[in-house]
Image (cartoon, rainbow, N blue to C red; front, top):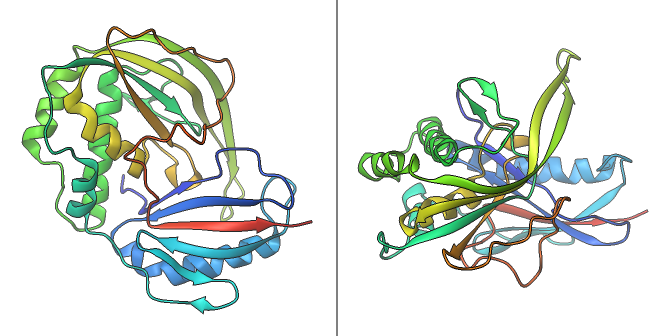
Length: 274
């Protein structure tokens, strides 16, 4: 299946009336040329109302990787500036990998994740190889759809795949979420089983660090255009005490943002109002 050239990252915490919140939209390849249409649609969406109660809102500004490019009271300040896939991957890649270092990695699902293995929806803790295959497959699909060369390369992809089967899940906390959407074209209701939670894996070579950073940029799994697949990765020392796994979906701490996190192509601030 051809990949959608868009990934949505919705607000990751509760939004209350009268507060300012942000959401991010990443446009891949040819879709980047439609940034003006995205902004126009965002303004109309805010006017019609967002959220379950259709709360009306106001689009304040739009930024890309270089800063603010559109403001409510001034309109367009400049054109958006797309980033080449190789340049984007270079920002996720590390200067040198310490392949001999073995660590634990915790993957925290910030939004519901929809993963398939052998054409079946996963309802339990995914094996490490599933994450690796899905990320490599998504990168290949996006590269093909965007008509750009795959920035990862065959040699590194094969190395990650061969090492993936040595990694085991050593802890998990899962909450199943049944998503439902209605097709605007056919009116048909479609249900997608997803899951929230945390999954801890070991031993994980630090050579996987670029792929984990890449995952935070492009998102993973199905329905990323609807906000699914936002995952944060944490690398831990193999001798450290495993992190606690709360039973609820954890909120992101303001001072706990990985150093590689950055805003994708079209982040927006929307001010909600009564």
